[in-house]
Length: 315
Image 1: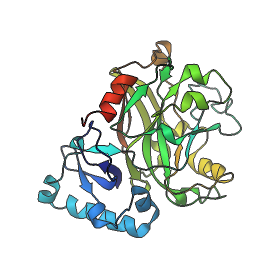
Image 2: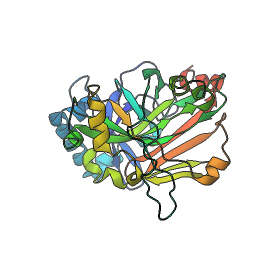
Image 3: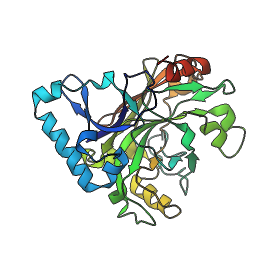
């Protein structure tokens, strides 16, 4: 399943305060349609609840399968382009990885030579979370904002001191994540928090794709497109620390709860993109895409323009 959280109102238009509702994306051949799952689930159920509860997941899956098999019912659903998506889950913890993809290694050299001994883990704070239809503000004090296209792992079952062998039993699914960062603030200190934790600098979505839909996490290709050019293209097979180890390693220190997010790091930009680095500016957009997980486009705007788009569109 591809589970989303949606809110009333069209895409790109901020709604009045309203209840977020669980939903699922259903393909109709021409695109995706939104199935509102709230009517078939209990009151107040969230996507995190569905990921954590096999009984709720079964009810959601049954609803998706029924509408997918009924052409008339499917045609009656709204296009996902006509609805507003919120972050699919609201994690209690957003854990991120620094260097976790190997760079280019010349033929004949051992690709593991420069591997770090341990993962470089940092935290993004809750204020960074933004949804796939949110515009990300470029703060006036940030002059070197950059993007990092990543795959985020969503926890579905509490994980505390789990073994590597059991770690994947605690993974519910995957989403795309843009670890937006301001390099100038990041360089000010050895700890990266100030460069990583501006409001909205963690865009998550569009959906959580359940783990059963991804046969091999380490056989995916992460691509990022900016200005029509591919700036990142690298396989998850080149990760330094594989996913089962990461989940196990983190769980030795902290209890991972359903809905928590572990973003698995960004591949290195391609040589041309590195050579022509340009900070993000008002009006820029960056698209992260991974086959099977979809696409996530982050749109950037100056603070005033972002406020108008995210908060003032209902006036």
